[in-house]
Structure formats: C-alpha cells, structure tokens
Image (cartoon, rainbow over all chains, first blue to last red; front, top):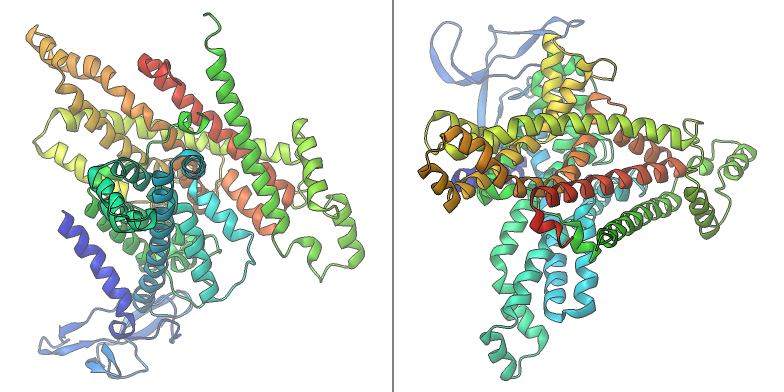
Length: 330
Length: 307
C-alpha cells in the first residue's frame, strides 16, 4: 500500500515538474471554443484502417447549445517531441485537448499539469518551512525545558486547537486582496507553515525531551559538545522518523488548504493554473458543472494525491491529533 | 469534599473566557490593520467616508477602539455590521445556529454510520464486507468536504434529486451534512475498529466468553462500553475538523452559516462583524471541546478524577 501511495504522489510531482514538456498546450492559451469535450487519441480511422495516432478535430454542431461533433473527414495526426513538447497535434489551429476545454477556451489537461506545479509547489515549500520551524521550536522546548518549554508548547497546543482553515483564511484575508503570483505563493507558504509547525514541534519535543537524558547525549556533553551541536547532530537526527511522518501528514492538509483558499477567491491570481483556481472556475456555475463534468478533473487530482499521501503514512494513523484541553489549562 | 467539582469547572470556565478573548482580540487587531476598507475607498465621497468612520468608531485609535469594543463585549453588545446594517449579535446568533445544525447533523450521521461499522470491521478480521469497509474508510479519509460537496452538487444538478444550494427544507441539509460527515465517519470507524479489537483482547472478554455469553451481546454491550473512551476522546478534535470542513461546505452549497458570514465580513473589512464571528466561533469551540471532555469523564471515571 505504501508503494501504491508513493507511486500516486510521484506521478503528480512528476506531472508538475515536467508540466512544460508533458502538456500539449500552454496553460493560459485560449483556443476557439469553450467546453469542448475531451478528445480521444485514436489509431483506427473511420474506414477501419490502422494508422499512426491521430485525433478528430471538433466541429460546432450548435453554438448556442455548445454542442460539438467530431470531424471524421479530417483526422489530424499527432507529432511527438516537437517544440519541446511530448506530444501535440500537427496543426496548431486544432489543439490536442485531452481533457477538453474550460469556460474560457483553455486546455484543461495543460492547466491540470501546471496546477500540480502551483498546488504541490506551495504545499512542499510550506511543508519544508513547517518542518524547519517545528523542529527548531520542538528541539528548543524539549532541550531547554522550564518556562521556554511551557511557552512554546502552550502556543502550539492553542494553534492545534483552533480550526486551521479559519487561521489561514483570516491571515490571508487581512493582507491586500490582489497580489501577484510570487507574492501569493510565498504568503500562502508562510501562512500554511504558521498553522503547520505545531504538528511537527509536538513529536519533536517529546523525542528530544526523552533522548536528551540518554547516555550518548551525556557522553557527547562530557567530551565538550555544546548544546547547539548536541541538538543539531544528535537530537534532531534522532527524531527524523517523526519529522518524515509529520511532513507526510501535513502535505495533504496543505494541498487542501490551497484548494480551499483559491476556491473562495483568496488564492492564486487569475491566469495562474492551480487546482484550487480550477475548482473555483468549475464551482462558479452549477449548470456548467453538470453539463461539462471534465472541468471537475482537479477534484480527482486532489483526491488521488491526498489518498496517495495517506497511503504512504498508513491510513490508520491519519486520524486527527488528540487534543486535550486540560494540557493547555494546566 | 462536596465542592470538589468547583475547581476544575472554574478552571475550564477561565480557559474558555481566555480563549474567546484571545481569538476575538486577534480578530479585532487583524481586521483593523487590514488595508482596503470601505472607509478608505477613494471612490466614496470624503464626507461619506468620514461619516462611516465616525459611525463605526473607525476614527478612533486602535487601543481606544479595542477598549470600547471590550466594554461592549462585556454587555454582550457586538456593535453593528456596516455591510448588513443590522446588529452583529443578531446576525451571528442566526448564522451560528445554522452552522450548529449542519455540524450536529453531520456528527450524528458520522457516528451512526462510523461507529457500528468500526465494531463490524474489528469483530471480523476476514471477509469481503470488512475489507470493503476498510478500503472505503481510507478513501473517505482522503475526500475533503470541499470536493465531496462539489461532486454531490454535480450529481444533484444532473439528476435533480436534491436541491443544490441554499437552506429551507430538510432536503437542503442532505448534501452539506453528508459531505461533511464523510471524513469524520471514516475517522470514527478507524478509531472504533482499533479500540474494539484492543478491548476484545482483554481478559474480561475471554472470561465472559467462557461463561457462555452470546457473542453479539458481548460485542455490542460489554466490549462496546469499554471501547468508548478512545472514540469519545477524539470528539473534541473532531469538532475542530467539522468546523473547518463546514466552512468549505457552506461556501459550495450556499449554506448561510458562520463560515460564509466570516468570509463576507473579511472581504468587506467589516471589523465589527469579523470580531463578532470570532467571538461566536470561539464560544462554539470552547463549549464543544469541554462537552467532549465531560463526556469522556462520564464514560471513563478514571479520567474524570484529574481534569
């Protein structure tokens, strides 16, 4: 199951990383028609003969009803490895739309791949930030003990108790509402890290607090190692398993937070493709959603990605963390 | 000795008050510092802007504003919303009731489906049905309410079986509450399953079996009672999950709840309304977490002794 999960996640990471190569069209390019249904590459033509992969271009059957039909008379062959793209059509005026087009004539498949880049990118950067902050805070709390420990862990417990999405929402909403792509990317990563670090700090603190009384730490101290060296070289590495587990648990939450933020219009600015902004466009119009279900493909992508991450850590452990108010009251 | 309960209760009350104060103060601070409010909109005439600022006390410096706001909070007066032009308290109570209805329905569905299924998967290790339930749980854990709600809206609008948005009849409750219940139900199923299989290994179960107790009675009464504590333990955390999830669901299905109100208030920079939502939300959270702690102490008296 772990392998299956890792494979699912790797597929999406690769899709995001290789998006410019894998997608047949640029993500923001607008083509001729909205809501074109997905095209299927074929190898048997209308006469029943085998030929190199090709697609049938679409022809408008009714513009008002947005009905299209396949133009079987003019098959368009696919070309491989041209212009730095894996596959595209021979004729640029009839683009290859593997997942159809959206409300404003853009390639859904290309946007899905570039969306993986934005959505997973922000989740991974936020995950790294949360790991660094959480490991530092947890190690400091566990090693120093006393009032510093109390302070850090109370703050962490409080942040875990509050519903994360409202913290994210409030922090994002009080910033200027319209920002550029890079500003949104970093702002979102920092906000998600703020919400995520307590989940890392808690296990790290527990491990550091017990490990710092073990003999090897005593031995290191006796040969003159300072606190910084002991924490960095011995205690943080001792908690590496907890770090990996927590990071894997945080990533799905971060992917979903991006989707939710973008869905309510607080995410990436308009032409940027991310899974959240695609969902926003899909959710705007319930009628379009029911008539053109392929615009909901980012939902499938998110579910597969989150499922993969859950499978990696083991589904039993993905229960929410136990919060016990008495620990904060104490 | 009769008054021993006072100390833990007072402690909890103090915690609840501190939580509400902290959350709402942060909300006031953030909302006041946010750029781009209606009073800064240059397309509004200057005299109108000045009137708005005076009417909603936005012309006062932040500390003065905050102290006044606290003073009114002590009298349960949350000010007036300038988006809706109505008292914040009335708005917030109305919307909080809607969110509470949604969350309670979802929690009831999740409990009624998740807990029995958990007992089922724990009692039968092999077989098709437990395997299916286990698989479904893993998938349900990965389907966030935002997406479940979108997919259900898609299905409902294609088939016309259910209303797709808004609030009115009981049918309007179906999509949002089921979408919200999915991950919670899966969590409860996994926990109940773990707790039950843990309990079934205890000596008292073996003793009861040896005495000839029928298996269903054993499973649904004796082991069930003993396995409740870990499940109830997460209810406090589940309330947070429900609250977070209900935000997305409210936005997708147009449910007039606290989440939507908060979002609108944040967008409009409606300071009083944002603060009011924060007060209502944190009260909700404090009550729910304490209720789950009390329930936990009731099921497992050992925990009640040291709150």
